[in-house]
Image (tube, rainbow, N blue to C red; front, side):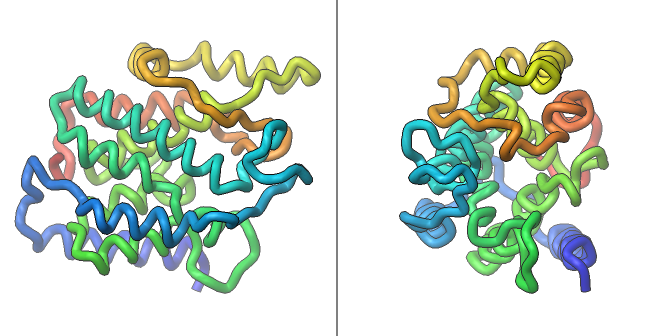
Amino acid sequence: MSLIDDAFELVDDLTKQAAGEPRVPVDFAIPEAVIDDIQNGFLASGLSRCECGLPPGSDGCTCRGSVAYWKDHGRLAADLMMNFAAREGLPAKLYGQLGLIHDADYLKHPHDKPSDKLKHPLPLTLKLRSCGIPASVCLAILEHAGYIGQGKNFSSRLSAALSACDDLATLMAILPQADDTKLERLRLDAWRQLAVLPRTLASAVNPPKIMIDSKMSCPTRVLSKPDLYINGPFEQATSGIVFEFSF
């Protein structure tokens, strides 16, 4: 079975499980012990897939292959998610938690590298479910992946917001490419295309600590289709449409 088949089978399973669960309380949050276990287990110190030949996390490292980058990315996505939730009157703690951990399993289980094992974000999704986290919350982690949820209808505002904040956090971390006119034009065009909400959220949080060279490791979708991958999910999250699961 392919990665996509595995992912969509899990989406179907979680959707059925979520439909049979009680409504998630408005004050629900993932236990801190579970958050710590995920951070320590998936983002263990020293784990690296660094591609630029420099010590991961060191000054000058401009790829996404280090624990330091992914922790910073999670922190930035968490800040964006909490600000969005506060703006919309949603549970900021839960939103922030999902922002913090949403890519925690990428380094150990990259979806874009050859492997016969489960790939991001399936291991993280299954870990959360095994800890008793509601299926509708787990769906948000699963649906944020580009090959699963991007450009589609999301199951909840939580899911749509996570997808948008993930790509917005990546866009914020892209280094200016002064030595590559075409790439720098793409970066600037992407910023110009952002709607008011993502611009507002980006200006309200501390900038990323670790910047990445998009020639090496930035997903081209973030640069080439910000309207689809950032504005679109935010529009779903704020449009007032009725989602399958509410929080």
